[in-house]
Image (cartoon, rainbow, N blue to C red; front, side, top):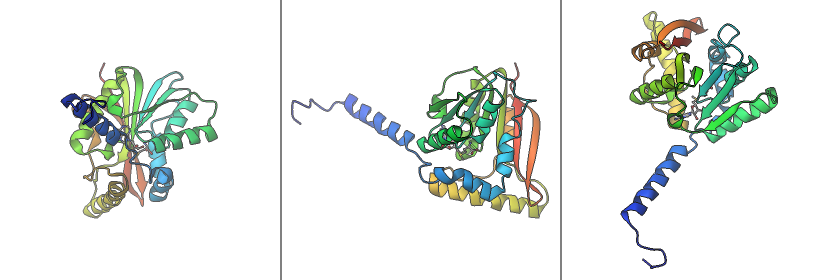
Length: 242
Ligand SMILES: C[S@@+](CC[C@H](N)C(=O)[O-])C[C@H]1O[C@@H](n2cnc3c(N)ncnc32)[C@H](O)[C@@H]1O
């Protein structure tokens, strides 16, 4: 090695490794599927995913000025709805593509609203006890179960002592055998596509209310959304115990 460049020390190697890791973490996994994400979700669910995502966002649950955080916001029509209801909205996403789609949607639908956008891994957002409501719509399902529990725990910490936490996602398969088989197949088709194109974890459907309760939330409300007369999605409202 030339003297000009200086010796390669353990520190230099460690720094390079850290940079590499940061690049991997910030890699945009939704680069290809991100632009068509909302189109696919409407196609897959006949708008029921959208209904599920906005189920807990209305004048009964949101007061003007409430601080609401949307984790893994995606195109974020739910976040726009909350901002239209007067909430002070912060959105977080790791994907630059998704945040760009969100910005485009906001420019089209609500250019006058002031929404804070954070391009980051949610685990690096450390504004603890700052939010009245934390929303995780179709977000926790991107992680394997151990990581999902860590992320949910982190989201709960971001909420104020009596905050509400909303989880919208595929519902845990219940009902008769045929209905359970249908729901599982329906889920595995979706998870396969996102495993393939976005490198999401491949796993079974999670029982979110059970995890929420175990992490200390009181589950106060569940709303179900049907496809072919079967409950395929649910929105779950949990409250932190002050
Ligand atoms: C399945 S999409 C759901 C998007 C949106 N919430 C919706 O319901 O349409 C998951 C989103 O989470 C984002 N995401 C994945 N891992 C993340 C992380 N560690 N921190 C922040 N966002 C993340 C992805 O970039 C993507 O936009």
